[in-house]
Image (cartoon, rainbow, N blue to C red; front, side, top):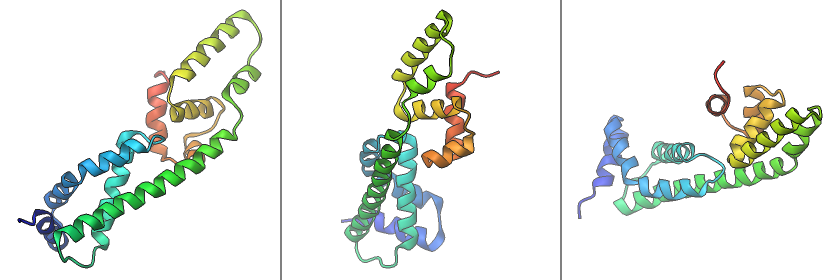
Length: 173
């Protein structure tokens, strides 16, 4: 049996060749996708990136190379442990979000009671219900006056991620 993965790992650790790392990532793509789908609070692209980073970090920490099966097991455990860490973090964030004031109360408290305002509020509520949870939270915090940096800290996301969501939600000026 040919030990292709072991060859790529040894070659990457020796020479740092990007093609070897890409081959290792390609080998573990099904495993990465499996766990990325289960991280519902992150977008699929972000969760695959996080799990790919787990493989990179495991590759840097790898000290022994005995068999291909040992390498596979090592990488599988690295991805699994990163998944568990991200999933536990999402549970904590979910608890924080549950303790926040519902967005309906924020919206109704800040507007007058004229008919056009009520129509706007209804349209806004419908739009918010159609969004995923993370986008809804980001939009509410943006409308509440938080900066990208504050939202990133509060939701434990990067500022660039908040900006990307902000650009997709808010129209250009």
